[in-house]
Image 1 (cartoon, rainbow over the protein chains, first blue to last red):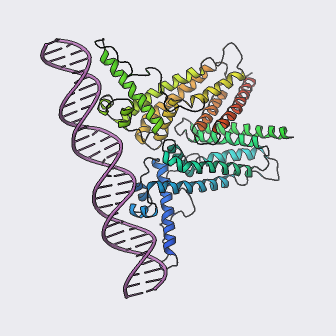
Image 2: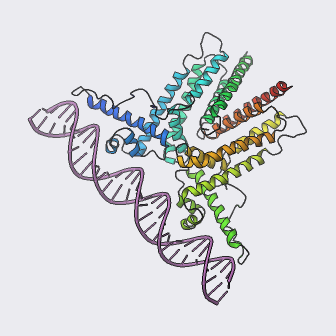
Image 3: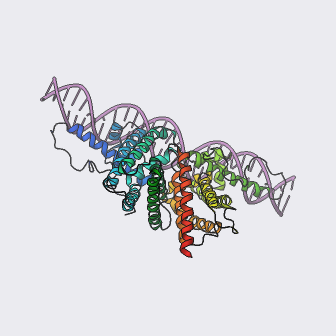
Length: 232
Length: 232
DNA sequence: TAATAAAAAAACAAGCCTGATGGTTTTGGA
DNA sequence: TCCAAAACCATCAGGCTTGTTTTTTTATTA
């Protein structure tokens, strides 16, 4: 559960774009096929990012993974960076959606926030940072540290993501009213999860990650209870 | 204090190898000069890793940064990977040393472990992950995820580092006897610091990092006190 | 001082990646 | 049926990187 299958599909919306061709003479076949190719390319690019890293994600390999010729790909995306740009937007949306799905139904608005709910949300956060979409995006973020052009593209998206991410958290925990405490907890969770996810070489990684999650759950519950007392 | 100067020297042992040439006709000049060139190359490589990232750290650029011709460099290191290998060993030692220096004199063996000591150690851990050596090494670690050859080289070193790192922590906190609690705290600190350090694009990064450090200090002190009660 | 070995520099060949060009097939409408 | 546009494909030149080879410089030692 803690590991990530390398062959996994990144998104799941139009999963196998090239598997079943739409019937001929159908209205708008061209547009549909074009969209499928586009999606196939974006998925292939994500897969390359995950398996090969940003530097080794060449246009030829993306096209190959997407079962598309390089020429066809250049028709949709005139340059490598334009593919990357599209991938960034694609992942932006996908990651928010996946996080919302993972966090759905955790905090019941009718019941007091329980430790069990917090435990669930911590586990969901852990699953979240092990999603292919997270890994692919992280690869881009890491590369952007030393790639000015990429940075210019990803920076505004990342800032927007952080904002929307935090808003989602606030929606997920309607009980948690003290904003300061919620934001601090959010940072604790996210930084911890990220730190663990990016320590892919650590010994006994999963056992340690589990221990940390247990600790974190207790910590969060405590912060929450204190925030309740403080606001009374 | 939280930011990293790009032009900073990585190590500090033989800082400016090319600045002052050893006097001529001195016994073993050649060997000494050779060692200096070697060190200059390693420092240059680290600087390239920090400024340009692993993928863009080419042999030509390393040589250029070290004020050495590519041919001269190839004389010391016959291939790019051999430079990287040397850098890994260099950073292995350097990072352990720097961490020990940062953590020196934190836990006074004669006095009960205080919250102030814990605060200091948390701040030191934060400084640690902002050191150039950490950033350079992290660049290698990240690249190794998708670079099999690099992974083969860095994996044993990384495992050894983790072991020695933990041992150092145990030496730094002689008061902290309950090993389980100490290891859990160590993981909390390290994963958190890493997560924050690698979120170089976050908004209000420093303020949030400070808040997290404050929280973390309280958490650790609590874990420590509980471990004391538990072992009585 | 002269020979020898080490170090440094310069030039070279092979491979890969990108972006561009020109040509071919498919589609939707005239 | 035929045509224009979109989608797709194959090939090529230019630039960059690596590792090798060749040449020059420098230091040790006999």
